[in-house]
Image (tube, rainbow, N blue to C red; front, side, top):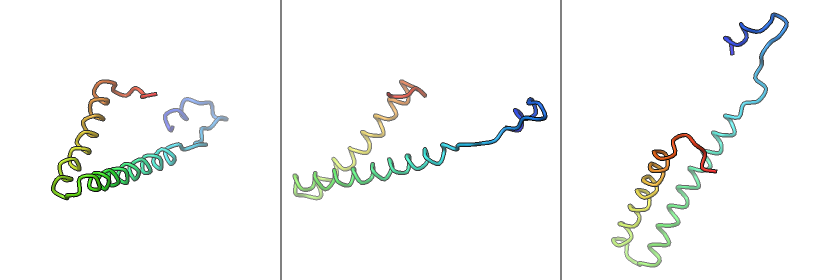
Length: 84
């Protein structure tokens, strides 16, 4: 903002009226919490259906790896474009 202020006339000034980063940071935090809660619930449901902790282990490891792979593929193919 200092570089822009230097280009303005003396009787004008710049000020920050709205900082959206607070809301974006909060939204990202909520998404991360929801992601971890949902992964935990998936593991519980898988355990309820399989009934054995050893057989639950493989799907419990596969789900996060699949999510990471999906988001990596989206990031690689679309770059910074919005999904919507």
